[in-house]
Length: 465
Image (cartoon, rainbow, N blue to C red):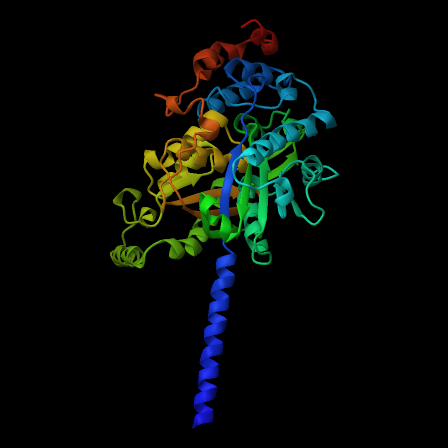
């Protein structure tokens, strides 16, 4: 009997020891964000209405039909007159290798310099992990090597370069970091997220490939993470959930957003009519995994009950009936990738969000344009500048990427945040009274019917305006 009791106690003690060890390990695997810095371009890189028109007219392949399409697209894009692009595009030059590296260096080093200058007590020599994501540019030596050389980082630093991941690449980079944190204790990580615009400007006339010129602009963000609990008091966000969905096995989804050449041999990025369908499918599949992690049981049961009731009555669910899942029961703030007005409005409508909820994404798009994978952080910066983020709040970041994939992250706010960051000089003027840009007012004459019967040199016509 005594032997049995002894064995039972030893088993119980061993189980308790394993449980404590597991809990301690999980606690050391937490991913905290200490700081982030977004890129703000210089004044000579601004892309207003007039400079945009000059850039358009540098493309001698465009006719009246293509110009009308561009006008319609940019008017409805949700983009304002304060966005920016690389100098070679503004100057009408084909990019040289030096231009390509200069574009990347300007964004990456600017944001990293500011990040290391923050009072976070983290220096370049203390960085253990470095992840850089740039989808459309992959030089040798790599961009991570350029960063290591610039800041003289340690020889044992773990580096990763991600390419071809699309607009949600920064969320994928964070997933890489959080998985590495499971193997390295008290580690510090840097994620740099930007995109190469200069060498990827489309010069053809295929409409499905001209869309990217209207939306994509210069931008980037550098982020600092740690799993060191000793630095938790400095952290601003804690990663709670991250769900990735990839539907690239579908040919239709794979081809809906792809880099390609048009019939004339011009390289660009083609967006097909199947993009909306692929995005809806990937988003739905992702939410099926994420929702049980973030919503209270009562909300899930309510949704199931109402859905079964409607199904029993053979009635179609209508969006305005409010019978969908109410994500606001588990999420306070929504950071939709500012990839375009259609994306923001589509996700906002599907989730039943208000204008207030989608305002950060709309304003980030209006002020900075689609900055690819860095776009999330401009929207987050808007929330912070408006002092919306309070301790205990949860933030949902949702984004899509070529391939086709959908990635969602849920953050917990660890302290009240009020840094005006990259919005410092303009936050008081946002939101503006109207998001309508002046393109239609200045160039609406392109839609006049009489132009269809005339043969005009539009490049000369624009030059005189």
